[in-house]
Image 1 (cartoon, rainbow, N blue to C red):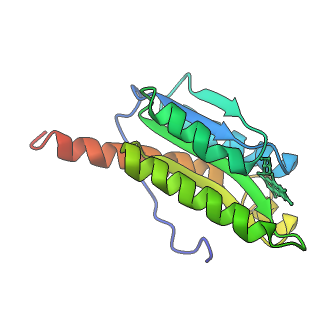
Image 2 (cartoon, rainbow, N blue to C red):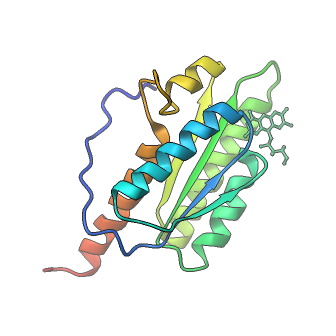
Length: 161
Ligand code: RBF
């Protein structure tokens, strides 16, 4: 799956939202890019004081996302990087995290931005990390998508406005 075809989202009137960003710590340089992209997106959207929480690895993202979703955040954004190694761990970690984050969003109704990179190589991950020279900025995209989803849900919960 490539990033080709990603939409240009326009998100407005979200400056009042409470947003939490959860970031794993494996693959530091890539994570630095993802976190910076996410925080830049939040600044651009007028969200001045997001919560940023660091967790050890991507595996820990769902449990923290679920807890924060239950504490009144309007959106949670999960960032992590998993690089394929020589063991089957890659598949297990990616599936567990993906299914866990899906469950959090669907079970709680709180949009979860999916900023988990699952890559064969570190170079691929760097190319998606929003760093100088990267072709994609997945941290920024994950924030924008989560807030666009909150805005979409708001528009149906207040019909006619
Ligand atoms: N966490 C990541 O965020 N990215 C990785 O690439 C990654 N690779 C791992 C490979 C193995 C073999 C194991 C056991 C764990 C890995 N983790 C990785 C850590 C995982 O997300 C979690 O933090 C730890 O397993 C502790 O629960």
